Every structure is written in C-alpha cells, then in structure tokens.
Length: 567
Image 1: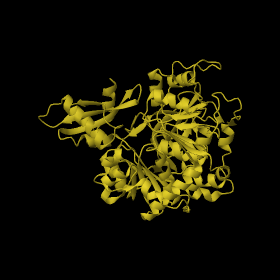
Image 2: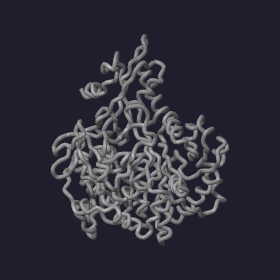
Image 3: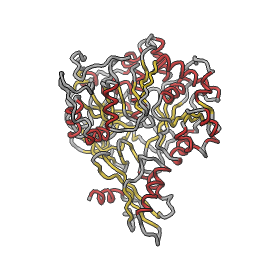
Image 4: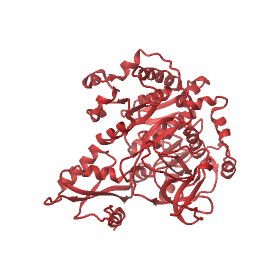
C-alpha cells in the first residue's frame, strides 16, 4: 500500500520550468519516459495500464482501493487485476468478441468495472461507458451507433435494457437469482472456470480503445473514438498538471461514465502504476470529508461544483491544520485539481484555507482530453481565474470569425494547431457527425482570450452547451425529450447560473392549444426527462410561455431566453 505524504511535503521535487519543458518537448522522449525499452506496451491499453507493471515486478502494488456504500473496503493489486481481467477477457472471447468490437458497462464505481475495462482492452476491444443515470433513449442511441456487443450491468440498472437485450449479450453483476430473473449470464459464474491468462492483442497506435459520446446542440450526441496514441497525452496531464507521484493516495471524484473520470480516474493513474481510489457512495460533503480522512488522500481531482458544495456544507469549517492540532480528523492533501467549468477566486481561497492545499484549474474536452492547464509540476505564473497554459505537446491559438489568429487580449475561438501539436490525438468524430477542423485547426467551440503571459481565459461557448455540475448537456436532447410529453407543442432548454452547480437547466415550454400549464404538468415533464434522458439533465425549472423567440428561419434564439432567465 502506498505511504501517505503530509499536506506540505518538504521533500517535494523542484518543479521544472514550464517554459523550458514546453519548448523542448519531444514525443519520442516522452514515450521513452513512459515505457522505457518496451515501446510495444503502448499498442495495447491493458499492457500499458496493468500488464507491464506485473511483468516489471510491481504486481503487488495496489491498483485499486474501493469503498462501497456500506463502508466496506476492497483492495486489488495489479497482479489480482491481471488475473481477473484475463478471466473476463476469456469470457468475452467465448462470446465471439474480437478486436475493435464494443464492450460496455452500466455499473457504479466498483472493482468489477475496472476488471471489465482492462479485460476489453486486453483482447483489443473498445470499452464503451454508459453513465448510470442514463435513461432508455440515451442508452439505445449509444448502443445502436456503436453496435455494442456485450453489456455488463447490475440489478439496479438492468430494467433500462429490457427492450435492448435482444440485440446485445447481457451479463449480470449480481446474484445468480438476479441473472436468472432476466435470463442473463452471471458475472461471477461465467468467469469462475476461465483461465487466468490471456494473450494481449497488439494494435496500431491509431486504433481506438475507448468509445465516448459528447454533447451537442444540434442533433444527437457525437461519437468520439479515443485512439491508443491518447495514452501519452493522458500521461502528460497526470504527471505534469496533476503532479501524480508514486507516494500519492489519489482520488478523482469524477464518474467514469464520463471522460474526465474514465481518462483520469482509471486510465491515467493505472498507466503510471499508481493506485486509484473509488468511492461508490454518491456525493455528500460529509462523506467526502470522511473518505479523504480515512484514506489519507493526498492528491484530489474534482469539479468546482463539488468544491462549492463542500464549502457551503460547513463540514470542513472546524479542521485544525496546525502541527499540534487537537482534531483527530486530519486531512493529508498535498494538492487539488479542478476541471469541468471555471474555478473562481472564492473557491480557490476556500480550498487553500479549508483543505490546506493548492488547487489548480484545468481545461479539456471529451474530444481532446485536457489541453490547457495550470500545472502543479511545472513552474509558471498562472493568475487565478485563468484556464492555465497550453499542455506541453499542444500549440493553441485564438481565432477570429475569419479563421485568422487574433492578437493577445482579443476574444475568439480556441483552436489547436494540429501540425504543431505532436501529443494531440483527435482526428474527427466517429461517424463524421460534424466537421471539427478548418484547415490545420481543430476548433474547440469555446470562446477564450489569451493574455500576454501565455495564459488562457474562458469566456463561454460559441454554441449552447449547458455545463451543469461539471456535466455537459446538449439542450437539443432535453428539448426533444420534453416534446415527448403529450401536452407539449414546443420546448427550449437553457442554462441558468447557479451558485452551487454553475448552471441548472431551465425548460421554456409552449403547450398545445387549450392546455393550461400547471405544477402537475411541470412535474411530469421533469420526471419524463429524468427517466428518458438522465437524472443530471432534467430541468429544475419549467416555465410555460406562449411562444419561443426564433430567427426568421425558425431557429430558437436561446441567447434571448438566457438573457430573460438572468433578468
């Protein structure tokens, strides 16, 4: 088990100059830093994140420390992960799963989830996350697009697949009676007699190992196939921005059903051979505090929403951080990291005072991973409120409407210069749902401003994406679901500023002729979105209006609704 470090580590390594490392960046040197003489390990994500650690004598290190909702703690070493993932890999092979096929889970943060991810990677399959709050429509769309071959789920979520199981092999992570009820294979039963060895399938570096979906304002969510070449970019972020060290107890609070949790709570730490911590319980400020104390967490990754909820709860107010403090409940945090939305000065100051560590803001997307960061392990000035500096291996620019590079101090769209970004791996959406490139530029869709010190400052989206509690929600998905209510004629969804969540979702609804808006209809609409789309995407406020503002071509003018909501 890893030893813990104090919040103020006097033996910490001296930070490298950001400017020096950024300008001297060399991808070949980075690959050697990660893999040494075994460069073929990068051709299979299981080898990169587990197999090589066992081969190199680090098999007895904990890969996972998991705490369930009852407080029961399970530890699994890399060697144990190696054997269990081989068994599930052999199960997948028995189902006919081949390299490139999609394997999904809808599971909480559990040991089984991690085993299945590694097993899929081991045989060259593509792992597809399904967020546990998704409803039927969200699940069906993703499974249909990806042609998902196998889904692992539990009794709590199995009912969502009732009409989907005919097209996909279902495996129940639960009791034998749970599996019998649905006619599924039972996870423990099918793996029990499988061999504990399975040969990893080596692929090309552009072969996908993750199948993500990202929100959009027009049409459905877009597919993002993450190639093996992304592993080196994940390492860059973990090592130089998060500053993950061998003696860290690292907890990324993000759900692995989404990019930040899957990239940086699972793939990133395991790639570095460092323990990741799972807390299966839903977010609660008191539970969060107690989890950090119990497990002596030294390195934390979370979102501004979570930090704001911790702050407003008051449960951290009485911590005594002095050397001889009388409070037995001690925090061990060395550093913290924040992503998903802008981190403001108030939260930064609170983290430094209440959690006794520095917090750094970092920016990224499902498509790109993290690309703009305040780096813990690289020395640079970074004013509070900025997104940080370009991640090494990435060249960023700000573009005007004419796609020309703007000077510092002017707002425009953030773009990645592909030919000058050796660590950048995104090459387009899985099914070409949208053109994301203009000449040599990847267009992020985010409006920013670059300052003369090289820092970037977020201004907003150039589309209508809603970021609520760190989750990105496309308003079209919400609107289409609201339209399924029999009383609704039209709907529009916008984000409304919220002190805790950053934004909440508000639906403006036009009812059919002759129907009067009531609290009962509003509640029905909210319940419909919860059930059909997701529990994080439902409108917390429903307002009935006579008409929606539109352009002459009929496009809803959401910016007018956002202004109306602000007023």
